[in-house]
Image (cartoon, rainbow, N blue to C red; front, top):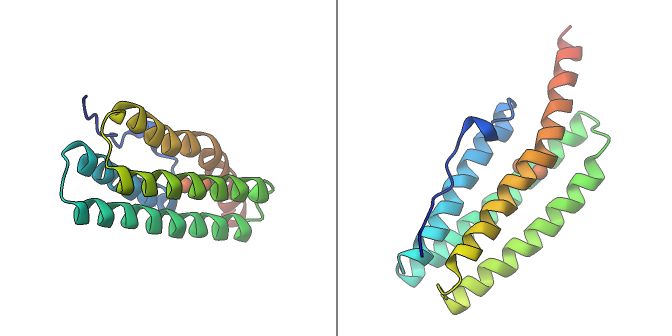
Length: 141
Ligand SMILES: [Fe+2]
Ligand SMILES: [Fe+2]
């Protein structure tokens, strides 16, 4: 079993600072959860790390949804449904982690959680950020 922290890299930068800053925080928080499982840290540390990640994720989704609304992003509803689905998946996964503290399929869990975040950023958030950046250019010109 190996712990490979998710690295914040240029690949994940979308160019829209408020999204990027939140995503960077999410990467750190996700690594904190995985580290707590991997290193079998005290249960209170794991619970706090999970609560922080879930709460920050929900706030981040709200901030993105607000930005999409403000810029009249045409795929806002689709993106919001994806957020709702992701929140549900994350909440269930974290609940299971706290209950079982099972490290037997750690690598699978790591792949799943890292994929959960990076795939959404690289697909849905990237598209939204590109749209918003274009709109900002139009408004500024
Ligand atoms: Fe995002
Ligand atoms: Fe998003």
